[in-house]
Length: 446
Ligand SMILES: Cc1cc2nc3c(=O)[nH]c(=O)nc-3n(C[C@H](O)[C@H](O)[C@H](O)COP(=O)(O)OP(=O)(O)OC[C@H]3O[C@@H](n4cnc5c(N)ncnc54)[C@H](O)[C@@H]3O)c2cc1C
Image (cartoon, rainbow, N blue to C red; front, side, top):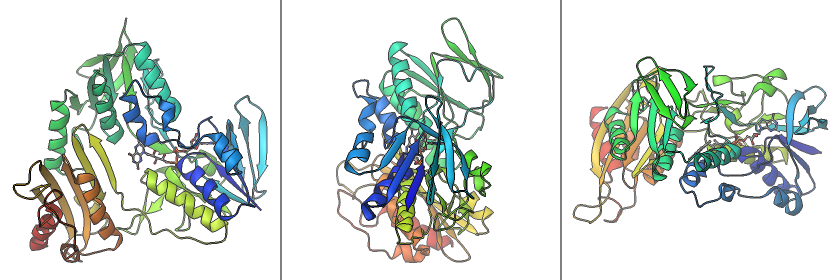
């Protein structure tokens, strides 16, 4: 019995390692189109910030380790172009163009996502780049060094754009961010979003929300990002407007797709075809708050889904509860964290959302070193359930968010959350943690 995996990063290599650990006799074949496997994409902005660090430090495990120590048949430079679910085969081409075909008993599609690149003039010019793969990271680092980049424009204001702003500013590069939506962080409560915006501006980043990019031109020595009312000059342009699932091969094989064209899977990660699973950024998931399908491309759920498929194909059927959309990122000296639904999302899913925003302290009164933390909380008037939380602070937001995330998984009411026995000591929080204060305030308006 063999297990074939398409894609050799978070979901794919987690699945391969887990399957081999649970059943060393199983033949596990991984087909990865690039030469890189098992690296921390999430670490790339921080690595790019430091010219002394080799970007290959982000490789968690080298291909030779998978092959020689774990016995995984890892074939890099193998791009899968077609799946035949009836015959149980995948076909494709190697990097040198040679065709290959592999038979499978169980198949995992773990093809991830690709950066969105708008179909506009100039987005293929040298110096216009995106950051998704390790090779993208290498290219960006090399470009900054060789061209002594001093000015960059980032198109987009998602978390990768924000992390890259910090990385580039750390290297002394002037950074301008631009996007069409006039709202800076549209999913975030206005008060919290303002704090992030002020932090970025204080660190020298120029923000132009509400400007649609029409194209990019090559000037004499600089690229020109063209908008209706201005042109921004830069040596380098980073396109960070989001990602789309790599689901084309699945779709061509007649496998059903779902939200945002991600591969539709059940709670056991099975696609619409038997013996074919999908996991990670290419696949959808259930949202633990709404119970409906969602597509949230993040790392933990990719690793977890890869594990789950490996467990299932090695005889221990696993089903996953789903995701809460918990995420955290750093913007210079701020921690930005969120989990669950926004007010708008809650209303769209039939809840009667009530919101509360408070400003608290990260440490006990009079304890040195504390700072302000903003907490925004959403509850449902009908059921009393906690629906979502956002936090922004100089410390303590990143790990605090895990408490409400667990509460969302437990489908707790705000009242139940208020009664949770959370840890307290002066260096870490006030007796009433700002999260509990927000929940207490929210309870009054539910
Ligand atoms: C800059 C950056 C920062 C990030 N930061 C965070 C963070 O802080 N926290 C977080 O949770 N997430 C973060 N992410 C997202 C996280 O990296 C992804 O959610 C995770 O890598 C998804 O894993 P995956 O295995 O599903 O897909 P991928 O990592 O995209 O891997 C898919 C693999 O499949 C291969 N492949 C695709 N098509 C084929 C084919 N036809 N044949 C063969 N191989 C194929 C690709 O080459 C790739 O190696 C970040 C991503 C980026 C780019």
